Length: 255
Image 1 (cartoon, rainbow, N blue to C red):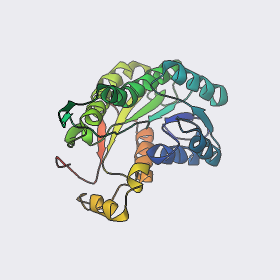
Image 2 (image 1 turned 60 degrees about the horizontal axis):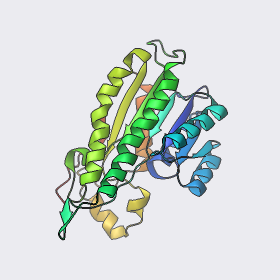
Image 3 (image 1 turned 90 degrees about the vertical axis):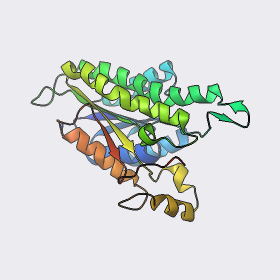
Image 4 (image 1 turned 30 degrees about the vertical axis):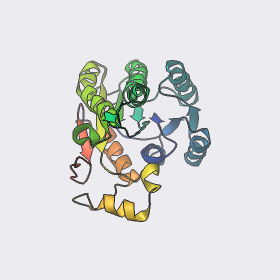
């Protein structure tokens, strides 16, 4: 599916980091972009920068997500591309100092990262399925979600995050099979250590140390490299039902 001005897209978590880079990439191809995020100030700034639309959306709320899609479709029509980048990554061990993992934290991580991704995906796919095909193979749209290498190499203190991201990776193939008759492709990217706002807030020494753990290239991944892979997925019609590690060959140690 060629990215151009005839298409519209929704990017969750699009105010910053991987989502913002993806929104910029899509806009640079002429795609009309709507950003979903809870950060209204940053989201509006990014949307203004790319000539897109911002919708303040909480992916854990069905009503909020539905309202966001209504706003996106009123502005740009039914989206052909959805990229799920909204996510959180708190740290806590299964048990620590005589206390069990806080269940409200575990539930929130799963609610945002896994359920939130599926909520947006299912609503978007329902709209896409009603569209006419636009590729020779009968393609109607593309959905890309974001997992993490933690889904496979979760470190100490990442139990909630790793479980939620493993769920994102695990649903990729069955969702792709569910949507195959509708001509909707479904992919997931599992980034390694990337230059996200959280990591960029660390000292340069810490950033360099983390980058040196990556076999090659020995540095943090750049947000635009994630966006480049989203573009490749959109444009290559044989990419479907798979999770791609984008990690410079890193395999995370326990800590």
